[in-house]
Length: 247
Ligand code: ATP
Image 1: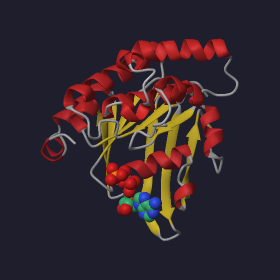
Image 2: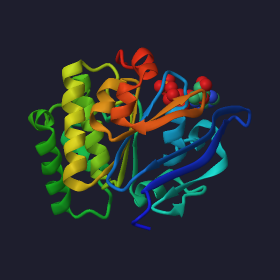
Image 3: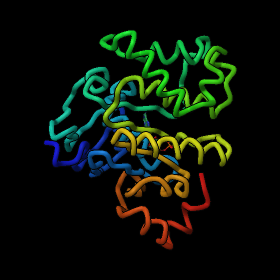
Image 4: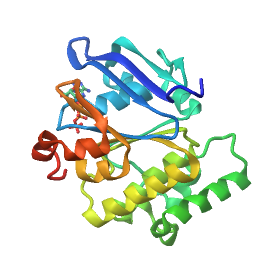
């Protein structure tokens, strides 16, 4: 399967509470080692798309009612979120959840799979602090006292501890100062380059997102209305008018 995309979604529909059709036949692909953005305004269906992939829909009385999702060529079906994490699918949900009463160090340790040896946990933590030096400087203070940007870095660090092959980030720029958004996005790009980690990024801040991804999908009202390279999306006049103002 290695030649195909790491993720493919084919005509997926999602229903909430058996009645609310939130996405209406979405098809997207993420190549192995690729970086792809899902763009669109509030309520367009971006978060729902990520939840369909990670399996977190079930917790919200949502279900995939049509279409199929493949990871590495295999249909994901009704597998549990935990089973998908074990396959290598990691979803950093909107709002950078961390354990506020634990230190960054403890947060990272708690996210490590049981199968990682103590030595590996230590080396993985070191690797994450290497990418996010700010986090390393604060590793023994409580996560609740970190700034919003540092908490977002920690949320991404926790995701990396799960040894993902596909990292899905929902609005990592939300509420952050522009210089921090640039810093975090640059680090994500570096991790992608260094490790071939595939990334699916949901963003309202289209300008920042299109700077680091190779391709983007524009979702409106539960449908993909545009799909192109980042270059061409940035040059598109509709995109410029509606989305490039920033999130
Ligand atoms: P946002 O950035 O605001 O989250 P989005 O593009 O991610 O926007 P979704 O959150 O996926 O959009 O929402 C898509 C549609 O599904 C919206 O109409 C929303 O109201 C609806 N929806 C989302 N979550 C639920 C839920 N748990 N139950 C019912 N409807 C929902």
